[in-house]
Image 1 (spheres, rainbow, N blue to C red):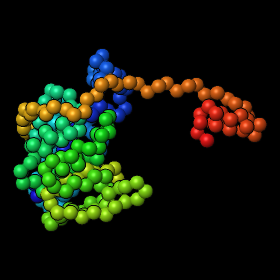
Image 2 (cartoon, helix red, strand yellow):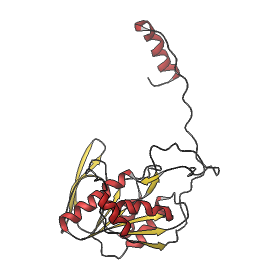
Image 3 (cartoon, rainbow, N blue to C red):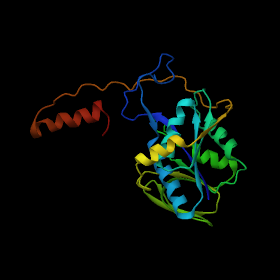
Image 4 (cartoon, rainbow, N blue to C red):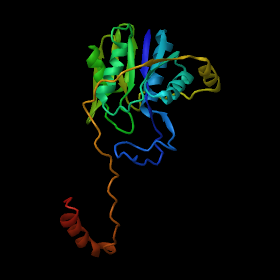
Length: 249
């Protein structure tokens, strides 16, 4: 099987994020960048599919030179080869990103392509399904159970209040949800092997974005809490505050 997994470089979820001087992005100085956590499930599922059905796994990322690090992480986990679609432009528009990725795989003989359901940071959750639409293949998001066979894929996806069962033919695009699997750790042997694997680079030109970030703002500071009293005697005042000030009842 020809298996593709798309990976993205994101700021460490434990990083203290500061807004850059331009007011439309984050300050990347002193920020540690990592493989998008949801993409870890995509990489693991791609590897399990190869182990079951044979073939090869190609890890692809769109970004600057530094994005090669997350491809290297996928290679250390067990991916066979990597491809960096190189651009120094900041890509905040999911459609802009999807067009670049779709242009790379359109017409190729892949069987299944994996994405994480969303990238932490912007949380758009759209790129995988947009790629499927652009290249004209089935796309399933929020996948929590999956079985891939030479004839197609079937499984379950999360929806509000429950799950849906699905089945479709190949090729297909799958956007993975947390809980689909337990991602493996890259072993020392895998890390050493990854250093010897070549990451191909291609310069790409991005289409004009249709979504533009105009400003980034910090969340408003919370007001300091106050003590209304103790015991049952404080209940009337608490109810009044919830009704008249917080307006939640």
